[in-house]
Image (tube, rainbow, N blue to C red; front, side, top):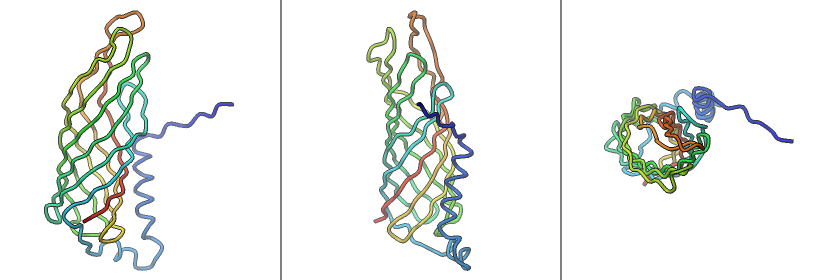
Amino acid sequence: MRMSLRRFSVAEFLWVILSMTLGLGVGTASAANWLTEDVNKSLLSLGGRAMYFDPLDGNGKWSGGAQLRLHLGQIFAVEGSADYRKSDSGDTTVHTYPVQASGLIYLLPGKRLSPFLLGGGGWYFTSVDGPGSSDDTRHRFGLHAGGGLQFMLNPSWSIDGSYRFVWLESIESKNDNLFDKNFKDEGHMVTVGLNYHF
């Protein structure tokens, strides 16, 4: 017997992340004060993350990666990240290694719970496997923009969730009959990370 899982929309997934993050502090009478108290983020943070990417053509999948942030004060941060993702579109499989650089602006600087805006660019090392295209490797550049929420568990650890839309050029391949085929590889990217601050 085969089970089928319902595909969650990006909005539903972000709502779950926000609810879980806020649920960490709601159990006490002083939850609002606790969530808005001042916490220092340190200069650097390093973390692992889960990443869900849903291309406009293809199926969304989970994968993993890592992120490094340099906090330039309490308002601004610069993030470098690397991930891996695999997308299937019919008879074509695409392996992508996104390396992104992002600027972050914290909307509640220095607080335990702070939403942020982000934007930047990325380099996408891409390998396309499909009929008539064996080991076709490409290097693409794409922009991204979005936002997220960071929750400081204590001065050394934080969790965060982010959403970004990634603009990428389409991927060219061949179908089973060796006719040219394009599919849109841009799409929605959601990350959930656990970070160590030092």
